[in-house]
Image (cartoon, rainbow, N blue to C red; front, side, top):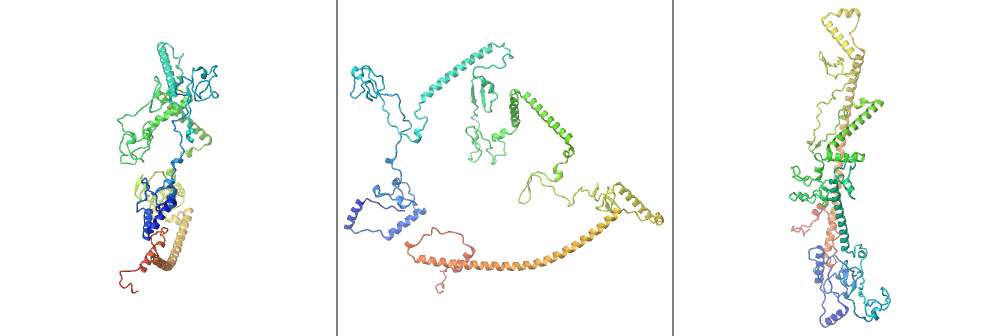
Length: 593
């Protein structure tokens, strides 16, 4: 974008006549090229922008047909004033202070009749036909007395859309002062009346409280009744002056918004003067003992929550007919809350007991906690990326891979709780066979009889009795069946282990051969893909060099711009193709190739 002087046709004709006498001057190619370069530099931001007559910068990206002023505008410098609204075409509206004046008399009263004035009243601003006064028996024209003053001729006021609809336009502030003074006189009279009634009450102190439980004074008696109920923290209610005074902070204290000047810290509400969050949150001073840590800290610390609950309880009791106040009767309120809580607990226990008596299920309520049943807890534990515990208690490590205190087959003791003659067993039945069924006291008797029999055999005393009676050593049927099952299980486990080992060996052989083949095939595919990419990059590089040579030969004025060229990081194949095909000018033998 450049500025061209756009002159009127008459000026252009004069210049043509003067140029015919002299030698014609044309713009050279070098000047045209410099102008274009200056335009590109201004668009790129490397050269200062063009300025108008006021010294303001003109955007270099504005089109030429918008920036160029028409010949009839008559500009000799770059400007955009022809694109802005013209002052002579702008509509002018009346100001907000201007309004219609009503009942205003203009000028002094005339002493003699003037030509063209009203024949009835003598005012110049209207005629007899438009006169609004009472028709006189003898008009001012003939009487020459009692002339009326001239009326104020109102100008035509033109307002915009908002001015026409402004409800306070033309409002007189003095009217409001009169209303405020009237209300102030009424309040003063009420206050005096109340003081007189208070004096009468003090004099007549012999009146019984039963006859007058509550003294309602004046029209503002309802305010006295609800004054204590509506008492809010941060305010002081004075019943004598009937004024609610806001408690201001002490000027020596630090303001809440000055603890932390960071704009992203806790929000401060200037209307209510409250800052709910901690202003020092997220700073090194957060953990220290500071005087102020936010309004919520004061509200939810100490006995503030208990006090709020009692306040709510007092409001609820007032709704049910019990007149109680938190500040006036704290002991009564505390006793009442305890009594209500006790009745609630009793009602809950009676309801629970009645349901249990009717439907049963007491044993399910006495069940152990879920932490013991499911071995799960809700204890929060936070770990780092290395596995160390940051927050919370670490889960205890299980010392054994076996489950502890698990009783099977009706046993009451674990395996290994009994030892006899180098063998482990169950203490509950003295059984020496693992995973056997518990026989209880009968098993103990049988085991003792077997032990005594073995002792007799060892001493050689019971050998003859056994041969005569043809008896075998005592052995229960359950023990025999259990031993047979154990032998069968051991044989089945051995066969499974052999089969699994054989299958694993076959899988290893197959996987080793297939993995070698797959690796070789994948390497071949990668090499082919790299070669294909490199070939494509080389052809692209040759095309780029050919295009560059064509642009170098081309005229500068016909060269295209590279504004739509997409800039991306080159790939490895493109870098390799550039290294292979680049021209090495420092090589002395490069011209011989």
